[in-house]
Image (cartoon, rainbow, N blue to C red; front, side, top):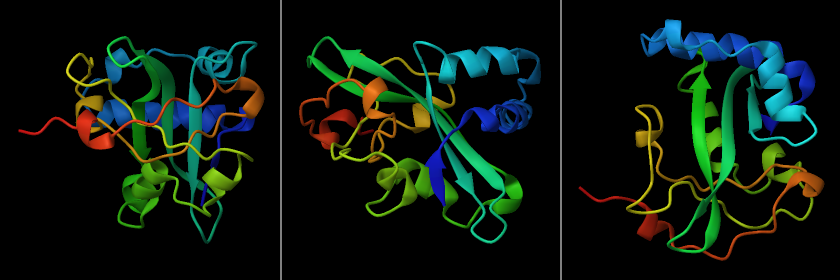
Length: 167
């Protein structure tokens, strides 16, 4: 099951960020504190949004995705930038990563936001910036799960094919 992150999830997100950093052999770079994450995700002006993947049997968190809004000056449209996506190694192969990316219709992530109907795409075409982790994730078919009060107006429709770099 995919759901919107809640303040009680901050310690779990923090732990999984460190697990991801260890996997990336960059544990020394993961210096964010739980307090910083709580403020970024749930402060007065949230800068980051999150999803939690839960094990369908136990309900325990097994993954997360963190993203933030961006803006393409070339296209004049909003999008999202997927900063991190992580699924615990013991839960991989169960579709949690795909569910975090897609937020498929009828899933808890799309149902969590009444009125959320627009698709969100990361990247802004040839001028996108990327990190080693996000270079693999140019776009997603996910839906915005930010609460309507904290969500920007839906972006204009974007052709996802135009956002994917072909090699």
